[in-house]
Image (tube, rainbow, N blue to C red; front, side, top):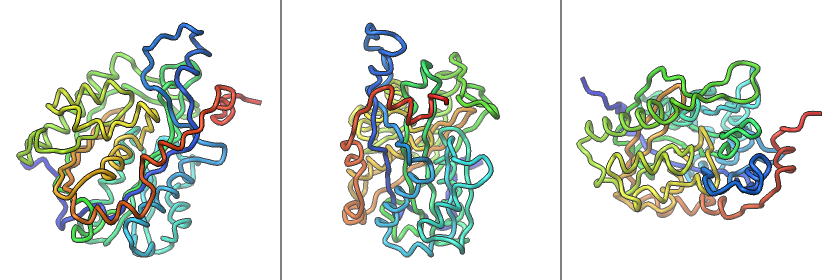
Amino acid sequence: MQKVMKPLREVGIVGYGAYIPRYRIKTETIARVWRGEQAGNQLPVKQKSVPGLDEDTITMSIEAGKNALQRAQIEPQKIRAVWIGSESHPYAVKPSGTVVAQALGIAPSNTAGDFEFACKAGTEAMQAAIGYVGSGMADYALATGMDTAQGRPGDALEYTAAAGGAAYIFGPAAEAVAVLKGAYSYVTDTPDFFRRNYQHYPEHGNRFTGEPAYFHHIRNAAQTLMDELNLKAADFRFAVFHQPNQKFPQKVAQDLGFKKEQYQDGLLSPEIGNTYAGSSILGLTAVLDKARAGDLILVVSFGSGAGSDAFCFEVTEKIEQRRQAAPLTGDYIKRARFIDYNQYARFRNKIKK
């Protein structure tokens, strides 16, 4: 049985865009509040992005979508599907996808919906977009992974739970900046991370977080895809993995045979934290900002609960002209404005009236 998934017609990324909020908080600032001055250097990331008072999953998805449209160079009305993957949709009963479609000028002749699969909700939306275009039901589909992640005050998640993400427009391979060579998903019921209804903050099962959750799923998804495509680590110029912290993606990359120069360009977590549904696909935007025609890129997400989506893309010559049409991911990272814990607590609604 063939395990790798390929659409009936060739599909690729015709446009992509990132968005990261301007605000940042240093994790040593968080550590001083909860651990005192002797916080040490065991912090999972250096700093993380924080959404402003007027930013949420919808507004950030619109910004990333605008960037993707600028690179795709198509009329918005040609997009027939809009899917938003997130852990932090602003409404419990109202889709984010319809608002984004309306704001971007895509509505009303389109389908829209929201995806939830923890941190792989964004790549789940990408899988759906690839299938929609690959089946011939539409020429273009928009998939977004975006989050304003929450962590309980003082909890380990507070040091990494960040905000941001990316949007991708999928379309015919002939118009693509990167063509899909194949995809594979690996999913099991592993209770490593969860949040029940009416709970404000998620909980995590510490002993499950690394093994059998993150490492087991990413290794199986990545290795199966490479085996099915007859590829090895050395064949890729870039590899991007889900980034809950600095250590996990580096370890799994090394386990799979990748070298630092292959994964370091997509490793954004030290500067902006874990953007959850936007994590791996935001790393992909940073890689596309540097890629050259002919480069192979491996992207593997991870979502708690648990599962991984793995993709192999081959970059085309169209990347050189398209990437300049919108802000680069590095531009968003550089525009950091640091805030203190009081401002952060207000922005994230951690202070209740």
